[in-house]
Image 1 (cartoon, helix red, strand yellow):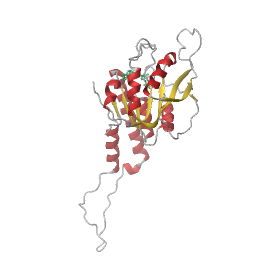
Image 2 (cartoon, rainbow, N blue to C red):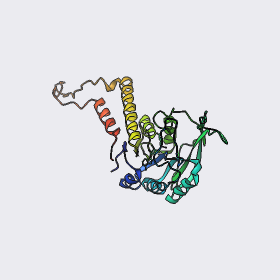
Image 3 (cartoon, rainbow, N blue to C red):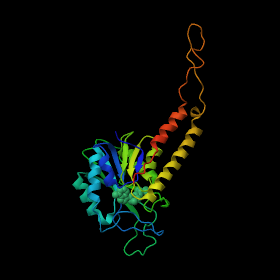
Image 4 (cartoon, rainbow, N blue to C red):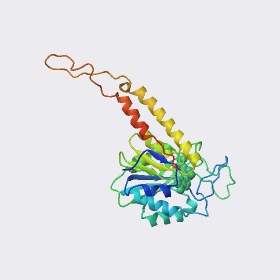
Length: 277
Ligand SMILES: C[S@@+](CC[C@H](N)C(=O)[O-])C[C@H]1O[C@@H](n2cnc3c(N)ncnc32)[C@H](O)[C@@H]1O
C-alpha cells in the first residue's frame, strides 16, 4: 500500500524506489531549473547548478515508473536548459502533449540588468504516460498570480496548481510532487478536499516551511468546517425504539463517536509529514 498525504524530507531519487509501480494518478512538479538561482534575500535552490543535471534522468525515470498508465504529468522547467529536460522526459518514456505559458504582470528579472528582454512568463510541459482518455481542456496560456515568494524563492501559486490538478487528475487521485519546495502542490490538494498528495523535499529548511504551511492550512480548514457545518459540533444522541413497549432499547447503549472526531482524526492522519533524513 502507498502512504499518502506525506512529504518525505529526503532526496526523491533515493525515496521514489520505495513506491510501487503505477501507484499515483498525476505528477505535478517543479524541479530545479539548472540556472544557479539566487534571490535578493540570498535564498538558493538545491541541485540548481547549470553544471550538474545528473539527477534529471534518474528522477524522471522513477516518476514515469510510479505514474499509472494513461495519466498526465505537468512539469515546470528551466527554459534555458530545455534540451536537458526534454531529453530526460523522452528517455523515461513520457510523450509531450502540450506546453503552457503563464503570463505575469511583472518581470522576474526586474531587479537585474535587462540585457535583452523582460522575463514575464513561467512555463510548464504537459506530458503523458500512455494515452490518457479525457481531461478538462485548459487554455495553453493562463494568468499568474504573484505569490510574493514569501515561503520559497520559486513559489508557485496554489490557485493555478489546483486548476491543473482539477484538469489532469482523476477525482480522488494521488498527486506526486517529487520537488515539493514549500508544499504549494500539497496545499492545492488539501484545499480541494478531493485529491491526495505525496512528495519529497531535500532541503531541511524548505521541508520545515512546508510542514508549517500544511499545519496552518489544515487549522484554517478546521475552523471553516466547524463554522460552516454545525452538524459537526452538535451531536444529538439517538436511540433505537423497541416497537412493542415504545421505550428506548437502552439508555446506556454506546453511541457512535461524533462525526467531528472522525472527520478531524482522518484529516490529521492525512496531513502528517515524515522527516526521514
Ligand atoms: C523549484 S523548487 C519547488 C518550489 C515549489 N514549487 C513551491 O511552490 O514552493 C524545487 C525544490 O526541489 C528541491 N530539491 C532539489 N533536488 C531535490 C531532490 N533530489 N529531491 C527532493 N527535493 C529536491 C529543492 O530544495 C527545492 O525546494
